[in-house]
Length: 533
Image: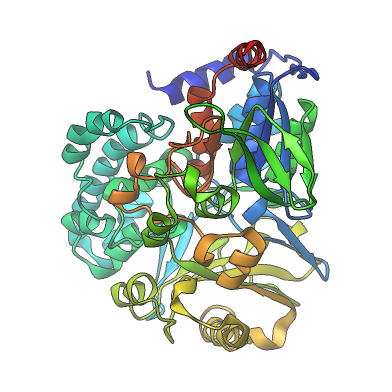
């Protein structure tokens, strides 16, 4: 029985057993969490449920980080993640607080998971229905139906190791990595996602349909390890969902859990530095200093800030020999994103909830973005239309959208002050010519977020939308560790640590804390020892 099966079994037993959360007292060890994104909120819930006194600090005026909500002209726009998979990871957080997820969150399945539209106007409905998927593949490439089944079997095998066994395990020592090398070799993790897909299917369109998923977590399908093909089976197993009221409903729910545990969320306050006790053999985090000058003392610090930003800007280089400025600069980072949020005065009822619009180029475009770092004239897009499921996101008779275009991060040198509006207009024209006819005349509200915005708003190094790129040499042990290699009592969650980006990945980074953060009594005893010394 896997840990996931045990979790489901445990939660089933708790359905009719409600327990009151434990409220930490003023003498409980204090954990300060930097950043109120999903990783920070989940970490705060987990630590609070274990009896820690928790304070979350975020520089934005609302919780959520990249998952904040924009409200404009009667429209509501989820700013960031919109694809909800592995809902049990949310359910567990509610369960830890003695509550039921479904009492607070109305989660709805989305079908198709994605409508993939090719540049020639043909489309493919990607779903969790095995027979429907085979029928879709047969429309394009009958000879690839058997290959798809072999691919899905491989995805299932990779999922069982890569997600069920490794996603929640810290890779703190090189021995941890060496233990999994035989399994990774057997699973062909040395292949890229596109390389593994191509082993099983031959049609170019089907290869694109089965390989685009790494872009949802910041990776180039032609570069990232094939372990990310586990997403295909993960979606098949649990489906793709939407939270009524938007992703912001999940953020509000998590904030409510923290409040119920006696925790505090301080918004609009920026952390300027992590403070250190350097009297021992290893420096230890003992609090944070805010930009206002106020110091919050802590027994441990959890950073959900961008990992590279945490190391480069919140800690002096002399105390971090592992993650030096030079190493951080030379690491590979995810692409940037251009995100356009817009509302229309009419509805486009034939547009699916999630649409992937693939442009005329696939590999060459990705090379422009990830390798050459040039802003191309063509693009591939992800279009989110929440009104397909939830009419509350827009005024009556209107539609709310956001469209996301992968672009190079800020090493490209693109001047987004000058480029943002021409790029938006080009996207608008493409959408008008394809699936949103007459779009520009239907607009009633509009705003854009560029890679420069990711740097300014989220302090994301290089404006990269998903932190460190998940190539094989930057995965597991080779990513920044969940427990800092150089600083005691400092822990990392979020896209830049193990296992990585995406909602399941980020929530799993917080789950790793259950393994590596000592219990409350250990911190109390540690305090006594320090006092005695």
